[in-house]
Image 1 (cartoon, helix red, strand yellow):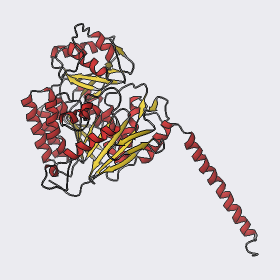
Image 2 (image 1 turned 90 degrees about the vertical axis):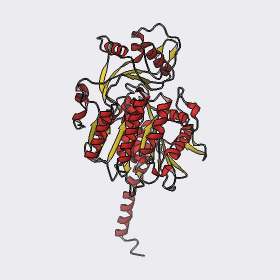
Image 3 (image 1 turned 180 degrees about the vertical axis):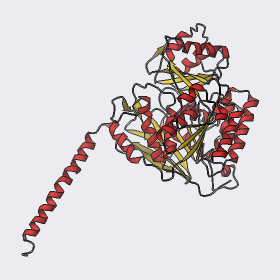
Length: 496
């Protein structure tokens, strides 16, 4: 008893109390700080906790096949300048054959606030657009363009330890705009750059009787080299030489503007070449805007099953559902506002189930398919879907892609602090999966939700949206590049 009341024990009690006070202060201070933290800051910090570097990273990447210079300008201003007076109907044209077609198609997508890309078949009309863009009174911005080049640029800038090789038609200006560490293929150099006209517009802008419900862009081009057989063959030749850890294929959508015989021949070339790639090397296909149903059907059945991963937006996803007779195919074309999450989930489940790898059935065509990962992104939320065990660290990839979405759109990439230019656009309750009655309760400190349906894993997160976007072009490619580089791929067995 005397020992319990000794001066030594009194000192020990005091020591415990003194140690507990700062711990309790820190504990309650952290809880108070979390409670008072803004929604945007909370979500960003929650993503940061999830983002982790994969244990096996991609060291060598080959990216192809489209590269150009983006000429970015104000869309409404340019549409007013082309001075088209005889427009019979505002509608979408699969291919543009005149300035009137351009105006009609631009306004069609402008009224929906949806991104789109169309080929200008008329060389003289495209020359007029180039001349207008070069006029002194027009504010234009030149940047590296083409899905492949933008993804290579993002990967090289964000992951300096990774060697990125770009295969595509590189002209003098695109060569100067590319990140210095991007390895270029000299066999695909061209004398004059391919140009893409990027007509951007902001939410609330007006053209005629139409008001843009969201900020977006319309792209038109007259490419001659990005979808050429020479570039395609060189792309796969470089793959054989470099032996990369990751292959990124984009620009396939540009084939739709060629004759049916020519594009079918090139799709066969791409498929044959994909089948010759080592199954242990993942292939990612970056989707882009398609307008020709016959061509999109060929891509869906000939190309998508033979890549390991794809990334696409709501316009591209619903178009595949429409031409492939998938669920909710009546949602194409997408109206203003985001698609309901549960509808996107249903289409993604159909796409991966129908065109994804199925190791359980050696006798089915799906056994020889490779697709196991889909990355879906739209303005207000992102979803990654996977099947099997080859892909991992997917939540980190999803968070990394979501984090840069609003920040890059607002040009806040190098800003450390949070900004009142970013906002969340999600409801307190969101139906994620109607089939399983899965509901997402919004929590700013834990924004990521995940669940399984049969063998397929879904991971969802809302996205911070830029209120006043400065640029929208190239954003989806940057999101996909970041998500890919934080993901991990490891395959033990070949199934071919």
